[in-house]
Image 1 (tube, one colour):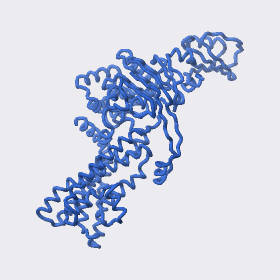
Image 2: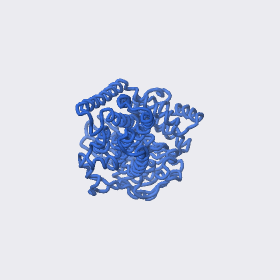
Image 3: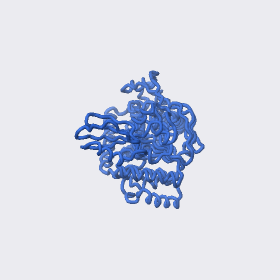
Image 4: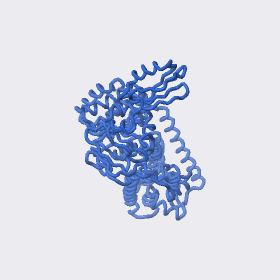
Length: 322
Length: 261
Protein backbone atom coordinates (compact mmCIF):
# COMPACT_ATOMS: atom_id res chain seq x y z
CA UNK A 1 0.00 0.00 0.00
CA UNK A 2 2.82 2.36 0.93
CA UNK A 3 6.29 1.81 -0.42
CA UNK A 4 9.41 3.82 0.10
CA UNK A 5 12.67 2.84 -1.50
CA UNK A 6 16.03 4.44 -0.76
CA UNK A 7 14.32 7.66 0.16
CA UNK A 8 16.47 10.75 0.75
CA UNK A 9 15.62 14.31 1.63
CA UNK A 10 18.48 16.74 1.98
CA UNK A 11 17.92 20.35 2.87
CA UNK A 12 20.37 23.01 1.84
CA UNK A 13 20.50 25.50 4.64
CA UNK A 14 21.66 28.88 3.39
CA UNK A 15 22.86 31.54 5.71
CA UNK A 16 20.17 34.18 5.53
CA UNK A 17 20.87 37.82 6.11
CA UNK A 18 18.53 40.65 6.83
CA UNK A 19 17.19 43.25 4.42
CA UNK A 20 16.75 43.32 0.67
CA UNK A 21 20.44 43.17 -0.18
CA UNK A 22 20.85 40.41 2.36
CA UNK A 23 18.04 38.26 1.05
CA UNK A 24 19.20 38.85 -2.49
CA UNK A 25 22.74 37.90 -1.53
CA UNK A 26 21.58 34.74 0.19
CA UNK A 27 19.59 33.86 -2.94
CA UNK A 28 22.80 33.86 -4.93
CA UNK A 29 25.21 32.76 -2.26
CA UNK A 30 26.64 29.27 -2.31
CA UNK A 31 27.45 29.24 1.38
CA UNK A 32 25.35 26.46 2.83
CA UNK A 33 25.46 23.22 4.68
CA UNK A 34 23.40 20.14 3.91
CA UNK A 35 21.09 18.56 6.44
CA UNK A 36 20.14 14.97 5.70
CA UNK A 37 16.64 15.01 7.18
CA UNK A 38 15.86 11.61 5.70
CA UNK A 39 18.72 9.36 4.76
CA UNK A 40 18.26 6.18 2.67
CA UNK A 41 14.98 5.04 4.14
CA UNK A 42 13.19 2.01 2.74
CA UNK A 43 10.05 0.30 3.99
CA UNK A 44 6.91 -1.32 2.70
CA UNK A 45 3.56 -1.17 4.46
CA UNK A 46 0.79 -3.61 3.54
CA UNK A 47 -2.91 -2.91 3.39
CA UNK A 48 -4.54 -2.93 6.82
CA UNK A 49 -1.33 -2.44 8.81
CA UNK A 50 -1.25 0.00 11.71
CA UNK A 51 2.29 1.32 11.87
CA UNK A 52 3.79 3.52 14.55
CA UNK A 53 6.50 5.78 13.20
CA UNK A 54 8.49 7.05 16.12
CA UNK A 55 11.66 8.93 16.84
CA UNK A 56 12.93 12.00 18.69
CA UNK A 57 12.14 15.53 17.54
CA UNK A 58 13.91 16.35 14.30
CA UNK A 59 14.49 12.69 13.44
CA UNK A 60 12.74 13.01 10.09
CA UNK A 61 9.24 11.74 10.89
CA UNK A 62 7.29 14.70 9.55
CA UNK A 63 9.60 15.01 6.55
CA UNK A 64 8.86 11.38 5.65
CA UNK A 65 5.11 11.86 5.99
CA UNK A 66 5.28 15.02 3.89
CA UNK A 67 7.07 13.13 1.14
CA UNK A 68 4.62 10.23 1.31
CA UNK A 69 1.72 12.64 0.93
CA UNK A 70 3.25 14.61 -1.94
CA UNK A 71 3.93 17.84 -0.06
CA UNK A 72 7.69 17.54 -0.40
CA UNK A 73 9.75 16.22 -3.28
CA UNK A 74 12.45 13.75 -2.22
CA UNK A 75 16.04 14.49 -3.15
CA UNK A 76 16.24 10.92 -4.43
CA UNK A 77 14.46 7.60 -4.04
CA UNK A 78 11.05 6.27 -4.89
CA UNK A 79 7.65 6.39 -3.25
CA UNK A 80 4.45 4.58 -4.15
CA UNK A 81 1.19 5.12 -2.34
CA UNK A 82 -1.57 2.85 -3.61
CA UNK A 83 0.67 2.17 -6.60
CA UNK A 84 1.10 5.83 -7.56
CA UNK A 85 3.90 8.33 -7.09
CA UNK A 86 2.67 11.13 -4.79
CA UNK A 87 4.96 13.58 -6.57
CA UNK A 88 4.02 12.80 -10.17
CA UNK A 89 0.34 12.18 -9.53
CA UNK A 90 -0.28 14.29 -6.46
CA UNK A 91 -3.97 14.95 -7.06
CA UNK A 92 -4.86 11.29 -7.56
CA UNK A 93 -2.89 10.27 -4.49
CA UNK A 94 -4.58 13.05 -2.50
CA UNK A 95 -7.90 11.30 -3.09
CA UNK A 96 -6.59 8.05 -1.68
CA UNK A 97 -5.12 9.45 1.51
CA UNK A 98 -6.36 11.28 4.57
CA UNK A 99 -3.99 13.42 6.60
CA UNK A 100 -4.20 14.82 10.11
CA UNK A 101 -1.57 17.13 11.56
CA UNK A 102 -2.05 17.35 15.31
CA UNK A 103 -0.35 20.72 15.44
CA UNK A 104 -2.31 22.36 12.68
CA UNK A 105 -5.97 22.08 11.87
CA UNK A 106 -7.08 21.56 8.28
CA UNK A 107 -10.52 22.98 9.05
CA UNK A 108 -11.79 26.44 8.14
CA UNK A 109 -11.00 28.35 11.31
CA UNK A 110 -13.81 30.93 11.33
CA UNK A 111 -16.57 28.73 9.95
CA UNK A 112 -18.81 26.16 11.64
CA UNK A 113 -17.50 22.61 11.43
CA UNK A 114 -20.37 21.70 9.09
CA UNK A 115 -19.15 24.23 6.51
CA UNK A 116 -15.70 22.66 6.43
CA UNK A 117 -17.32 19.31 5.71
CA UNK A 118 -19.51 20.84 2.99
CA UNK A 119 -16.48 22.36 1.26
CA UNK A 120 -14.50 19.13 1.50
CA UNK A 121 -17.48 17.15 0.18
CA UNK A 122 -17.42 19.35 -2.90
CA UNK A 123 -13.65 19.22 -3.20
CA UNK A 124 -13.48 15.42 -3.16
CA UNK A 125 -16.74 15.09 -5.12
CA UNK A 126 -18.43 12.90 -2.51
CA UNK A 127 -21.96 11.90 -3.66
CA UNK A 128 -24.86 13.14 -1.49
CA UNK A 129 -25.93 9.69 -0.32
CA UNK A 130 -22.42 8.74 0.76
CA UNK A 131 -22.04 12.09 2.49
CA UNK A 132 -25.19 11.60 4.58
CA UNK A 133 -23.95 8.14 5.53
CA UNK A 134 -20.62 9.64 6.50
CA UNK A 135 -22.20 12.28 8.74
CA UNK A 136 -24.30 9.65 10.50
CA UNK A 137 -21.46 7.16 10.92
CA UNK A 138 -18.98 9.72 12.24
CA UNK A 139 -21.49 11.18 14.63
CA UNK A 140 -21.84 7.66 16.06
CA UNK A 141 -18.10 7.11 16.24
CA UNK A 142 -16.81 10.54 17.25
CA UNK A 143 -19.93 12.34 18.51
CA UNK A 144 -19.28 15.31 16.28
CA UNK A 145 -23.01 16.08 15.89
CA UNK A 146 -23.05 18.12 19.09
CA UNK A 147 -20.70 20.79 17.81
CA UNK A 148 -21.34 20.67 14.06
CA UNK A 149 -22.63 24.25 14.04
CA UNK A 150 -19.94 25.76 16.25
CA UNK A 151 -17.16 27.78 14.58
CA UNK A 152 -13.94 25.76 14.63
CA UNK A 153 -12.05 28.44 16.56
CA UNK A 154 -14.47 27.96 19.46
CA UNK A 155 -14.02 24.19 19.73
CA UNK A 156 -11.94 22.59 22.46
CA UNK A 157 -8.73 20.90 21.35
CA UNK A 158 -10.32 17.48 21.75
CA UNK A 159 -13.39 18.43 19.74
CA UNK A 160 -11.27 20.01 17.05
CA UNK A 161 -9.14 16.91 16.76
CA UNK A 162 -12.27 14.78 16.37
CA UNK A 163 -13.44 17.19 13.70
CA UNK A 164 -10.08 17.00 11.96
CA UNK A 165 -10.15 13.20 12.02
CA UNK A 166 -13.64 13.10 10.56
CA UNK A 167 -12.64 15.66 7.91
CA UNK A 168 -9.71 13.46 6.89
CA UNK A 169 -12.10 10.55 6.36
CA UNK A 170 -14.76 12.34 4.34
CA UNK A 171 -13.63 10.88 1.01
CA UNK A 172 -13.19 7.40 2.51
CA UNK A 173 -9.43 7.14 1.86
CA UNK A 174 -7.61 3.81 2.08
CA UNK A 175 -4.57 5.29 3.77
CA UNK A 176 -4.33 7.58 6.79
CA UNK A 177 -1.30 9.61 7.79
CA UNK A 178 -1.55 10.89 11.34
CA UNK A 179 1.14 13.25 12.55
CA UNK A 180 0.85 13.41 16.35
CA UNK A 181 -2.95 13.25 16.51
CA UNK A 182 -3.01 12.97 20.31
CA UNK A 183 -0.64 15.82 21.11
CA UNK A 184 -1.86 18.03 23.93
CA UNK A 185 -5.07 16.08 24.55
CA UNK A 186 -6.35 15.02 27.96
CA UNK A 187 -6.72 11.37 28.90
CA UNK A 188 -10.41 11.14 27.95
CA UNK A 189 -9.90 12.67 24.54
CA UNK A 190 -6.92 10.39 23.92
CA UNK A 191 -8.96 7.34 24.86
CA UNK A 192 -11.83 8.18 22.54
CA UNK A 193 -9.51 8.93 19.64
CA UNK A 194 -7.60 5.71 20.15
CA UNK A 195 -10.84 3.72 20.20
CA UNK A 196 -11.86 5.40 16.97
CA UNK A 197 -8.56 4.69 15.24
CA UNK A 198 -8.63 1.08 16.35
CA UNK A 199 -12.09 0.67 14.86
CA UNK A 200 -11.04 2.28 11.58
CA UNK A 201 -8.13 -0.08 11.30
CA UNK A 202 -9.88 -3.27 12.35
CA UNK A 203 -13.38 -2.87 10.92
CA UNK A 204 -12.64 -0.89 7.80
CA UNK A 205 -9.17 -2.26 7.17
CA UNK A 206 -7.63 1.19 6.73
CA UNK A 207 -3.87 1.39 6.47
CA UNK A 208 -2.62 3.81 9.10
CA UNK A 209 0.77 5.42 9.65
CA UNK A 210 0.99 7.24 12.95
CA UNK A 211 3.69 9.39 14.51
CA UNK A 212 3.49 10.09 18.20
CA UNK A 213 5.44 10.92 21.32
CA UNK A 214 3.08 8.91 23.46
CA UNK A 215 4.19 5.32 24.08
CA UNK A 216 0.62 4.43 25.06
CA UNK A 217 -0.53 5.23 21.51
CA UNK A 218 2.04 2.78 20.20
CA UNK A 219 1.27 0.06 22.71
CA UNK A 220 -2.47 0.21 22.28
CA UNK A 221 -2.70 0.71 18.54
CA UNK A 222 0.27 -0.34 16.50
CA UNK A 223 1.01 -3.81 15.23
CA UNK A 224 4.30 -2.63 13.82
CA UNK A 225 6.81 0.01 14.84
CA UNK A 226 9.37 1.82 12.72
CA UNK A 227 11.91 3.78 14.72
CA UNK A 228 13.80 6.57 13.03
CA UNK A 229 16.71 8.58 14.37
CA UNK A 230 18.96 11.08 12.60
CA UNK A 231 17.08 10.37 9.38
CA UNK A 232 17.73 6.65 9.41
CA UNK A 233 15.64 3.64 10.39
CA UNK A 234 17.08 2.02 13.48
CA UNK A 235 14.34 -0.55 14.02
CA UNK A 236 11.49 -1.92 11.97
CA UNK A 237 9.48 -4.69 13.57
CA UNK A 238 6.58 -5.70 15.77
CA UNK A 239 5.85 -4.23 19.16
CA UNK A 240 7.35 -7.44 20.56
CA UNK A 241 10.58 -6.75 18.70
CA UNK A 242 10.71 -3.27 20.17
CA UNK A 243 10.08 -4.65 23.63
CA UNK A 244 12.73 -7.31 23.23
CA UNK A 245 15.20 -4.74 22.00
CA UNK A 246 14.75 -2.10 24.61
CA UNK A 247 11.91 -3.12 26.83
CA UNK A 248 9.07 -0.71 27.38
CA UNK A 249 9.81 0.13 30.95
CA UNK A 250 7.32 1.85 33.14
CA UNK A 251 8.79 3.77 36.01
CA UNK A 252 7.63 3.86 39.63
CA UNK A 253 9.15 6.25 42.13
CA UNK A 254 8.55 5.52 45.81
CA UNK A 255 9.56 7.90 48.56
CA UNK A 256 9.88 6.12 51.91
CA UNK A 257 9.67 7.77 55.31
CA UNK A 258 12.75 5.83 56.33
CA UNK A 259 14.94 4.07 53.85
CA UNK A 260 14.04 0.41 54.38
CA UNK A 261 16.80 -2.06 54.79
CA UNK A 262 16.13 -4.43 51.95
CA UNK A 263 19.03 -6.28 50.52
CA UNK A 264 17.63 -8.33 47.69
CA UNK A 265 14.40 -8.15 45.79
CA UNK A 266 13.64 -10.74 43.20
CA UNK A 267 10.44 -9.87 41.48
CA UNK A 268 9.83 -10.98 37.93
CA UNK A 269 9.52 -8.00 35.61
CA UNK A 270 11.74 -5.53 37.46
CA UNK A 271 14.41 -4.32 35.12
CA UNK A 272 16.29 -1.79 37.18
CA UNK A 273 16.26 -0.43 40.73
CA UNK A 274 18.02 2.66 41.91
CA UNK A 275 18.11 4.45 45.27
CA UNK A 276 18.18 8.21 45.40
CA UNK A 277 18.48 8.65 49.17
CA UNK A 278 14.99 7.78 50.50
CA UNK A 279 13.57 7.49 47.01
CA UNK A 280 13.47 4.22 45.15
CA UNK A 281 13.20 4.31 41.35
CA UNK A 282 12.04 1.10 39.71
CA UNK A 283 11.95 0.40 35.99
CA UNK A 284 9.60 -2.48 35.31
CA UNK A 285 7.91 -4.23 32.42
CA UNK A 286 4.15 -3.89 32.68
CA UNK A 287 3.50 -6.87 30.48
CA UNK A 288 5.14 -9.15 33.07
CA UNK A 289 4.57 -7.30 36.30
CA UNK A 290 1.30 -5.45 36.79
CA UNK A 291 1.36 -2.12 38.54
CA UNK A 292 -1.06 -3.15 41.36
CA UNK A 293 1.09 -6.19 42.03
CA UNK A 294 4.22 -4.08 42.27
CA UNK A 295 2.39 -1.58 44.51
CA UNK A 296 1.48 -4.38 46.92
CA UNK A 297 5.12 -5.37 47.20
CA UNK A 298 6.37 -1.83 47.53
CA UNK A 299 4.20 -1.19 50.60
CA UNK A 300 5.51 -4.37 52.22
CA UNK A 301 9.10 -3.15 52.10
CA UNK A 302 8.55 -0.02 54.16
CA UNK A 303 6.28 2.94 54.78
CA UNK A 304 5.84 4.95 51.56
CA UNK A 305 5.16 8.67 51.82
CA UNK A 306 4.60 9.28 48.14
CA UNK A 307 4.32 7.11 45.04
CA UNK A 308 4.56 8.36 41.48
CA UNK A 309 4.20 6.45 38.27
CA UNK A 310 5.73 7.63 35.02
CA UNK A 311 5.46 6.52 31.47
CA UNK A 312 8.70 6.12 29.58
CA UNK A 313 9.65 9.03 27.43
CA UNK A 314 10.06 8.23 23.77
CA UNK A 315 13.38 10.08 23.67
CA UNK A 316 14.68 7.84 26.45
CA UNK A 317 13.39 4.76 24.73
CA UNK A 318 15.17 5.63 21.51
CA UNK A 319 18.42 6.25 23.36
CA UNK A 320 18.26 2.70 24.66
CA UNK A 321 18.43 1.22 21.21
CA UNK A 322 22.10 2.00 21.12
CA UNK B 1 -17.41 25.77 -10.42
CA UNK B 2 -19.58 24.63 -7.53
CA UNK B 3 -16.42 24.18 -5.49
CA UNK B 4 -15.21 27.66 -6.40
CA UNK B 5 -18.47 29.22 -5.17
CA UNK B 6 -18.35 27.17 -1.97
CA UNK B 7 -14.76 28.21 -1.27
CA UNK B 8 -15.35 31.88 -2.04
CA UNK B 9 -18.54 32.06 -0.01
CA UNK B 10 -16.72 30.32 2.81
CA UNK B 11 -13.95 32.89 2.84
CA UNK B 12 -16.47 35.72 2.57
CA UNK B 13 -18.38 34.43 5.57
CA UNK B 14 -15.11 34.15 7.46
CA UNK B 15 -14.43 37.81 6.67
CA UNK B 16 -17.91 38.87 7.77
CA UNK B 17 -17.08 37.66 11.25
CA UNK B 18 -15.02 40.79 11.65
CA UNK B 19 -17.37 43.47 10.29
CA UNK B 20 -15.92 46.53 11.99
CA UNK B 21 -12.43 45.72 10.81
CA UNK B 22 -13.71 45.40 7.25
CA UNK B 23 -15.57 48.72 7.28
CA UNK B 24 -12.76 50.71 8.82
CA UNK B 25 -10.06 49.32 6.55
CA UNK B 26 -12.06 49.81 3.32
CA UNK B 27 -12.88 53.36 4.31
CA UNK B 28 -9.31 54.26 5.19
CA UNK B 29 -7.89 52.64 2.08
CA UNK B 30 -10.29 54.51 -0.21
CA UNK B 31 -9.42 57.73 1.60
CA UNK B 32 -5.69 57.24 1.18
CA UNK B 33 -6.09 56.76 -2.57
CA UNK B 34 -8.32 59.80 -2.86
CA UNK B 35 -5.79 61.97 -1.06
CA UNK B 36 -3.13 60.57 -3.39
CA UNK B 37 -5.00 61.70 -6.46
CA UNK B 38 -5.97 65.08 -5.04
CA UNK B 39 -2.27 65.72 -4.49
CA UNK B 40 -1.51 64.74 -8.06
CA UNK B 41 -4.35 66.95 -9.32
CA UNK B 42 -3.03 69.89 -7.30
CA UNK B 43 0.42 69.49 -8.81
CA UNK B 44 -1.01 69.21 -12.33
CA UNK B 45 -3.18 72.30 -11.84
CA UNK B 46 -0.06 74.27 -11.08
CA UNK B 47 2.02 73.03 -13.96
CA UNK B 48 -0.79 72.46 -16.48
CA UNK B 49 0.68 69.23 -17.73
CA UNK B 50 3.27 66.53 -17.28
CA UNK B 51 5.48 66.20 -20.32
CA UNK B 52 2.61 66.72 -22.72
CA UNK B 53 -0.09 64.97 -20.67
CA UNK B 54 -2.86 67.10 -19.16
CA UNK B 55 -4.77 66.40 -15.98
CA UNK B 56 -7.51 64.29 -17.59
CA UNK B 57 -5.10 62.27 -19.68
CA UNK B 58 -3.02 61.41 -16.62
CA UNK B 59 -6.31 60.69 -14.83
CA UNK B 60 -7.08 58.11 -17.47
CA UNK B 61 -3.74 56.36 -16.90
CA UNK B 62 -4.15 56.68 -13.15
CA UNK B 63 -7.70 55.32 -13.26
CA UNK B 64 -6.83 52.24 -15.32
CA UNK B 65 -3.81 51.30 -13.24
CA UNK B 66 -5.47 51.86 -9.90
CA UNK B 67 -8.55 49.82 -10.88
CA UNK B 68 -6.32 46.99 -12.13
CA UNK B 69 -4.04 47.08 -9.09
CA UNK B 70 -6.85 47.21 -6.54
CA UNK B 71 -8.69 44.35 -8.29
CA UNK B 72 -5.48 42.36 -8.02
CA UNK B 73 -5.30 43.25 -4.33
CA UNK B 74 -8.92 42.19 -3.81
CA UNK B 75 -8.80 38.84 -5.59
CA UNK B 76 -5.18 37.78 -5.17
CA UNK B 77 -4.63 38.83 -1.58
CA UNK B 78 -3.24 35.43 -0.58
CA UNK B 79 -0.80 35.40 -3.50
CA UNK B 80 0.30 38.87 -2.45
CA UNK B 81 0.76 37.79 1.18
CA UNK B 82 2.30 34.46 0.24
CA UNK B 83 5.19 34.90 2.66
CA UNK B 84 2.96 33.75 5.50
CA UNK B 85 2.46 30.34 3.86
CA UNK B 86 6.18 29.75 3.78
CA UNK B 87 7.04 31.01 7.23
CA UNK B 88 4.23 29.18 8.96
CA UNK B 89 4.48 26.16 6.68
CA UNK B 90 0.82 26.62 5.90
CA UNK B 91 1.38 25.75 2.26
CA UNK B 92 1.28 22.10 3.40
CA UNK B 93 -2.47 22.26 3.78
CA UNK B 94 -2.90 23.34 0.16
CA UNK B 95 -0.79 20.51 -1.18
CA UNK B 96 -2.78 17.71 0.45
CA UNK B 97 -5.91 18.47 -1.58
CA UNK B 98 -6.84 17.07 -4.98
CA UNK B 99 -7.04 20.61 -6.37
CA UNK B 100 -4.28 22.87 -7.66
CA UNK B 101 -2.72 24.85 -4.81
CA UNK B 102 -2.98 28.06 -6.81
CA UNK B 103 -6.76 27.85 -7.16
CA UNK B 104 -7.03 27.07 -3.45
CA UNK B 105 -4.89 30.09 -2.73
CA UNK B 106 -7.02 32.37 -4.90
CA UNK B 107 -10.26 31.22 -3.29
CA UNK B 108 -8.98 31.35 0.23
CA UNK B 109 -9.61 34.97 0.84
CA UNK B 110 -10.94 38.15 -0.72
CA UNK B 111 -9.69 41.48 0.56
CA UNK B 112 -12.91 43.43 0.15
CA UNK B 113 -11.49 46.47 1.92
CA UNK B 114 -9.60 47.25 -1.32
CA UNK B 115 -12.89 47.61 -3.20
CA UNK B 116 -12.92 51.21 -2.00
CA UNK B 117 -9.84 51.83 -4.12
CA UNK B 118 -11.49 50.21 -7.15
CA UNK B 119 -14.55 52.45 -6.87
CA UNK B 120 -12.35 55.49 -6.51
CA UNK B 121 -10.40 54.47 -9.61
CA UNK B 122 -13.62 54.10 -11.60
CA UNK B 123 -14.72 57.57 -10.46
CA UNK B 124 -11.45 59.05 -11.66
CA UNK B 125 -11.94 57.28 -15.00
CA UNK B 126 -15.44 58.71 -15.40
CA UNK B 127 -14.34 62.26 -14.49
CA UNK B 128 -11.33 62.02 -16.81
CA UNK B 129 -13.32 60.75 -19.79
CA UNK B 130 -15.88 63.54 -19.36
CA UNK B 131 -13.11 66.11 -18.94
CA UNK B 132 -11.26 64.89 -22.03
CA UNK B 133 -14.21 65.91 -24.13
CA UNK B 134 -13.59 63.41 -26.94
CA UNK B 135 -16.36 62.32 -29.30
CA UNK B 136 -17.78 59.66 -31.58
CA UNK B 137 -15.38 56.98 -32.82
CA UNK B 138 -12.58 57.93 -30.47
CA UNK B 139 -14.86 57.82 -27.43
CA UNK B 140 -16.44 54.57 -28.62
CA UNK B 141 -13.04 52.92 -29.11
CA UNK B 142 -11.84 54.10 -25.72
CA UNK B 143 -14.91 52.74 -23.93
CA UNK B 144 -14.65 49.42 -25.75
CA UNK B 145 -10.96 49.08 -24.99
CA UNK B 146 -11.12 50.12 -21.31
CA UNK B 147 -12.23 46.69 -19.97
CA UNK B 148 -9.56 44.96 -22.08
CA UNK B 149 -6.95 47.32 -20.69
CA UNK B 150 -8.07 46.78 -17.11
CA UNK B 151 -8.17 43.00 -17.55
CA UNK B 152 -4.68 42.96 -19.09
CA UNK B 153 -3.58 45.11 -16.17
CA UNK B 154 -5.00 42.68 -13.60
CA UNK B 155 -3.27 39.78 -15.36
CA UNK B 156 0.05 41.63 -15.42
CA UNK B 157 -0.28 42.52 -11.72
CA UNK B 158 -1.21 38.94 -10.87
CA UNK B 159 1.74 37.57 -12.84
CA UNK B 160 4.12 39.95 -11.08
CA UNK B 161 2.60 38.98 -7.74
CA UNK B 162 2.95 35.28 -8.54
CA UNK B 163 6.56 35.67 -9.69
CA UNK B 164 7.39 37.45 -6.47
CA UNK B 165 5.51 34.88 -4.41
CA UNK B 166 7.45 32.07 -6.10
CA UNK B 167 10.72 33.58 -4.89
CA UNK B 168 9.49 32.73 -1.39
CA UNK B 169 10.04 29.01 -2.09
CA UNK B 170 13.75 29.77 -1.82
CA UNK B 171 13.98 32.84 0.38
CA UNK B 172 10.91 32.33 2.62
CA UNK B 173 10.54 36.08 2.95
CA UNK B 174 9.45 38.32 0.07
CA UNK B 175 8.44 41.60 1.73
CA UNK B 176 11.76 43.16 0.71
CA UNK B 177 11.36 42.05 -2.90
CA UNK B 178 7.79 43.30 -3.12
CA UNK B 179 8.92 46.90 -2.75
CA UNK B 180 10.92 46.57 -5.94
CA UNK B 181 8.81 44.17 -7.96
CA UNK B 182 5.32 45.36 -6.98
CA UNK B 183 4.92 48.58 -5.03
CA UNK B 184 7.35 50.77 -6.94
CA UNK B 185 6.22 49.61 -10.43
CA UNK B 186 2.56 49.91 -9.41
CA UNK B 187 3.16 53.48 -8.35
CA UNK B 188 5.14 54.23 -11.49
CA UNK B 189 2.29 52.93 -13.66
CA UNK B 190 0.05 55.73 -12.39
CA UNK B 191 1.98 58.26 -14.51
CA UNK B 192 2.96 58.49 -18.18
CA UNK B 193 6.01 56.37 -18.94
CA UNK B 194 7.76 59.13 -20.88
CA UNK B 195 8.60 60.97 -17.65
CA UNK B 196 11.00 58.17 -16.66
CA UNK B 197 14.66 57.86 -17.69
CA UNK B 198 15.52 55.37 -20.44
CA UNK B 199 16.79 52.49 -18.30
CA UNK B 200 13.66 52.60 -16.15
CA UNK B 201 11.48 52.66 -19.26
CA UNK B 202 13.26 49.53 -20.52
CA UNK B 203 12.46 47.76 -17.25
CA UNK B 204 8.81 48.79 -17.38
CA UNK B 205 8.42 47.40 -20.87
CA UNK B 206 10.34 44.15 -20.33
CA UNK B 207 10.92 42.39 -17.00
CA UNK B 208 8.27 44.34 -15.11
CA UNK B 209 5.90 45.17 -17.96
CA UNK B 210 3.59 47.61 -16.17
CA UNK B 211 3.96 50.07 -19.08
CA UNK B 212 1.61 47.90 -21.11
CA UNK B 213 -1.20 48.16 -18.56
CA UNK B 214 -2.24 51.67 -19.55
CA UNK B 215 0.46 53.75 -21.24
CA UNK B 216 0.80 51.74 -24.46
CA UNK B 217 -2.90 51.59 -25.43
CA UNK B 218 -3.78 55.09 -24.18
CA UNK B 219 -0.97 56.55 -26.24
CA UNK B 220 -2.76 55.35 -29.36
CA UNK B 221 -6.31 55.93 -28.16
CA UNK B 222 -5.55 59.59 -27.38
CA UNK B 223 -3.78 60.08 -30.72
CA UNK B 224 -0.44 60.63 -29.05
CA UNK B 225 1.36 58.17 -31.26
CA UNK B 226 1.74 54.49 -31.97
CA UNK B 227 -0.21 52.17 -34.24
CA UNK B 228 -2.99 49.60 -33.88
CA UNK B 229 -0.29 47.34 -32.43
CA UNK B 230 -0.51 49.42 -29.29
CA UNK B 231 -3.93 47.88 -28.73
CA UNK B 232 -2.97 44.30 -29.56
CA UNK B 233 0.19 44.23 -27.49
CA UNK B 234 -1.14 44.64 -23.91
CA UNK B 235 -3.31 41.49 -23.85
CA UNK B 236 -0.62 39.54 -25.70
CA UNK B 237 2.08 40.63 -23.26
CA UNK B 238 -0.24 39.89 -20.34
CA UNK B 239 -0.85 36.31 -21.44
CA UNK B 240 2.77 35.56 -22.24
CA UNK B 241 3.77 36.97 -18.89
CA UNK B 242 1.06 34.92 -17.15
CA UNK B 243 2.28 31.77 -18.87
CA UNK B 244 5.89 32.42 -17.79
CA UNK B 245 4.94 33.16 -14.21
CA UNK B 246 2.84 29.98 -14.01
CA UNK B 247 5.79 27.95 -15.30
CA UNK B 248 8.04 29.53 -12.69
CA UNK B 249 5.45 28.84 -9.98
CA UNK B 250 5.25 25.14 -10.84
CA UNK B 251 9.02 24.97 -10.88
CA UNK B 252 9.12 26.66 -7.47
CA UNK B 253 6.66 24.26 -5.84
CA UNK B 254 9.15 21.46 -6.37
CA UNK B 255 11.52 23.38 -4.12
CA UNK B 256 9.05 23.91 -1.32
CA UNK B 257 10.79 23.20 1.98
CA UNK B 258 7.93 23.21 4.44
CA UNK B 259 8.76 23.78 8.11
CA UNK B 260 9.53 21.49 10.97
CA UNK B 261 6.65 20.82 13.30
